Length: 135
Image (cartoon, rainbow, N blue to C red; front, side, top):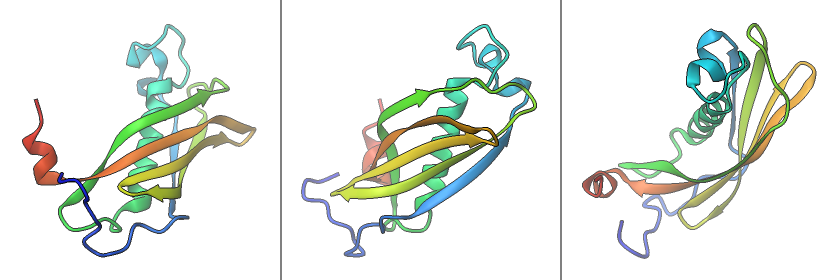
């Protein structure tokens, strides 16, 4: 991506864009299945993936032609374990834009309250340039 990249549309994605995704926790979503722990509860990596999916959904259709976004930085606190059979809702909201950087607030909740929360920074990249630099 050349320095000084600007949005071809002249406008960055609007702050406030958000998306919410629901997940019914099954055995394939557990720390055991993800090999990220030895307990049969919702895995942190699965929560992160759910939040990334919500962030992508929030900005879908709002990026310049031939552009996508990639995760750059994540700050995340997993607060409460959720067992198999539970249901969680992940929400990503675009808080601000900083040039090509998109800063999202993340939250994951269940009926009893907050499960996880954090911040995600995604960067808008030109697909062709990005893929040309894959190692």
